[in-house]
Image (cartoon, rainbow, N blue to C red; front, side, top):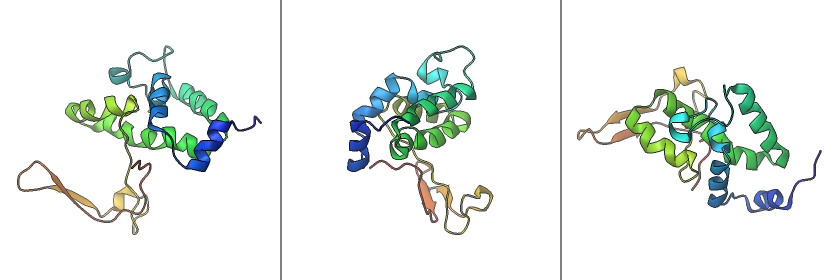
Length: 152
């Protein structure tokens, strides 16, 4: 096993990944790779023909060589579980608003499923989101226990 690099050690000690690092990961294709299906519409052509789960696994395996679960999860964790639902089920307008910034390393996304009474069982979640009278905003009511990848 390779020794951890000084940058990885510093990231772990500081408990922060610089925002500029996300842009470097985007330029290298790592953020697009974390989405599973290559998001061609927003990231251009995949680096190899017939991109599939095998290529995703190789990409993630390679970045795991840094020997820091926190760094790996911070780079691809939230994006890898938060952006695919937007890409697969979001309206074109939502995709256009969210995906480009996330894939460029400029915006961050999270997934908020886990609740105190349902865990991650999405069939039993209690939180609701209903449009307000104006129809412009959602009012979210409920409890969440953990959020996957919050960057504040």
